[in-house]
Length: 325
Ligand code: TXA
Ligand code: MG
Image 1: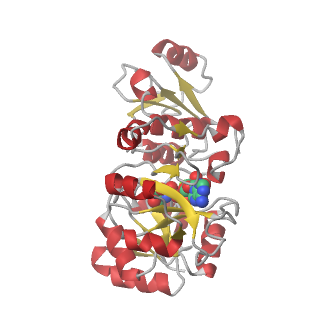
Image 2: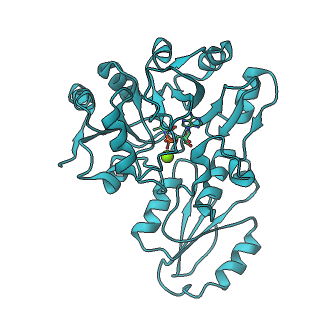
């Protein structure tokens, strides 16, 4: 199969492909999604297949209007409208009760459904043209770093999907915040750019965060897998002293560029063995992919206090570094 790269003027073609059951990757403000109609079961099956995604990991459904939420969810609580008013369109995914019109495959058999309205204009226009909500897991092979550009999508899926719509580099670079609205009190299942503090400000009370990785409880099935991981090991250190100690202990430190160091501010490290890059939520995934492409042997991240305050970035780094598979 030839994978077409479409631009914004070709969204009608993208919508036609989707309605014919093909997979079309599309840009969002967080990362690129792998799109299919939520009602096309065969297309949903092929999403799981091409991504190599475990069948117990449910998909997010993307809508272009509040009206469309009713097509996929039922018994929608007032709390949802309060959050949608504050954060939609944008990087917030809400878990609601699933409408029976949504194939249970989409939600991996759960009685719930994850819904979000992206703010990327191209994504919204594509959903509008397709006239159906679109499922959109991140458009990467399962376990790999999420894609923040067309090139990343092609790296993983060239020849495997019908098309990718070019929307430039992703604005945020990290996936949406996922919040469950199923119980009385909302629970954050995945941190993202909409922070716990932003959510608490709107809700007026403090929230709980589900730490599925550490507790082993599987509320959001996706949280139990090792994610976002490059080929080489990642080592997280808190201080410059720890970093220097780790670097000194590296057997391959002499080999040009074999060791990558990421930090959010410039470091004065000079050695031919070390390549240094500035890290932010926006650059994380492209740097992880770059470490793969360049055959980096080990990757160190200096997580100083400022970085540790970024809950979404730290969540992804810990998962990438985690031995959980
Ligand atoms: O920013 C994003 O959310 C991107 C863009 C493309 O929209 N999408 C994305 O999808 O990150 P994905 O499939 O890579 O991550 C979906 C996450 C997984 O952790 C999954 O377990 C969780 O959402 N999820 C989906 N449906 C759920 C449900 N019904 N209950 C609990 N968690 C759910
Ligand atoms: Mg993903």
